[in-house]
Amino acid sequence: MIPSPEQIAFAHKLADVSAAAIRPYYRTGLAIDDKLDASPVTQADREAEQVMRALINTERPDEGIIGEEFGAEREDADWVWVLDPVDGTKAFITGRPLFVTLIGLLYRGQPVLGIVNQPIAGERWLGVPGQGCTLNGEPVTVSGISELARARVGTTGPQYFSIGGLAEFNALQAEGRFTVYGGDGYQYALLATSGLDLVIEEGLKLHDFAAVAPVVIAAGGWMTDWHGEPLQKGSVGRVIAAASEALHQQAVAAMQNAE
Amino acid sequence: MIPSPEQIAFAHKLADVSAAAIRPYYRTGLAIDDKLDASPVTQADREAEQVMRALINTERPDEGIIGEEFGAEREDADWVWVLDPVDGTKAFITGRPLFVTLIGLLYRGQPVLGIVNQPIAGERWLGVPGQGCTLNGEPVTVSGISELARARVGTTGPQYFSIGGLAEFNALQAEGRFTVYGGDGYQYALLATSGLDLVIEEGLKLHDFAAVAPVVIAAGGWMTDWHGEPLQKGSVGRVIAAASEALHQQAVAAMQNAE
Image (tube, rainbow over all chains, first blue to last red; front, side, top):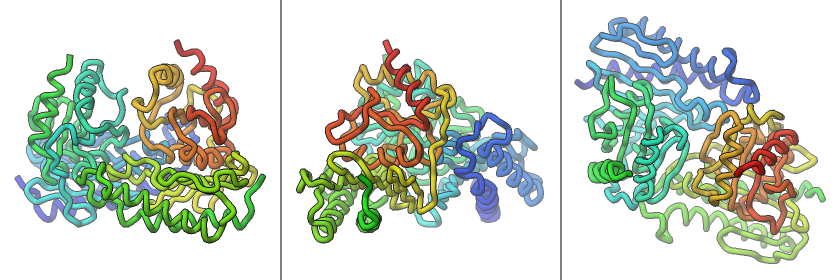
């Protein structure tokens, strides 16, 4: 199912209001202990989700919401918005303009639209599988690189893998060209823009992958779980995104060869 | 020795001309094999260094140059400019706005001025020890955090350490609050802006630390080699930067406790 033009326009509106809520907190109070409820990142996260939820409840009252901060409403609706206001908390609290707001739309559990929005740099990726991917309105695509030896590999950090998962990741990265760490959801947007060729992560939740999978797929990439199954509501959060089908197959095979 | 106002103004000019040389290449040809001489990152690197060298040779002909790409000229002069046009090559070729241009000034081998310039985000840090540190003209300082358990730790990636160095880093990061990977020279600028509290790296060369050490120190931080010795021309490239003297001491002690 393809989202309507009204839903696409509405997704942009969600990105606009969340960005306005987040920006004032960026690089403020960086030395504050952000475990406190009143820390800038917590306030940015909550306020951004609140303004997005209010907008959905007012303008799209039949559609559901699954939010990282405030949980689910009308979760069984056909159309459900999945919101992660500040993906990349550590990027935010160390002052890196790599944190992103993730806005996904599910139709009966399948991701059909994604926005990755970076409010400081003013970068917005929109992906609708079947309709392409854009960065600030300009079409972007994956690199199409098909050989693992040429692949630029990304993951947020080795500490986010399980022991077995890290062994699989290490088997893969040994065959890639190089690995770059850091970036959370921003990495998938870079993959959709030919900047990275493979992103492998573990422990993602629905709100982490619901928006980025459509961006990658709309840009011509492949994104599945580690067994090659499509990502959907209920998927375990082991994800692999690749710049081509051939690269995806080689990466899955390399991981399965881990000891 | 404190640099003259003319030298400080000239350092800004170097940052301006290098940024203009680099910007047109950002996120172009991302799928190109950048081992080729004509790759965008190689062209950006070389052109930016060439314009800076030309400016020094024209306007400051008595001062020396040590450049990452084209080597040394008048290396024995009292004042020597140390240039790294694109620090964070992998950030550049994956499309992250975290690569930086590093411009340092040595007086008889001691770093006395540093600029960290991010041409895409338009962020410029200037540090002159004794005269403070600024980001786009506004004063910035380190967080001053003094307890290792509260410290946000940064390093570019585990793959850049030797085996022994990684053991020391791991002993340290186990006691910190969390570790964020990625960032190269940008990390030291974040430390100078209260975004990170500790940065530990190995294998840095003079052109990697000559500009960032003055930025950290001018912002109120501590930056030395792993033995606590000041960084200067000839230092081995194991560096540690900290948001306070107390934190620096705890970090050095934690690393010395590595098995």
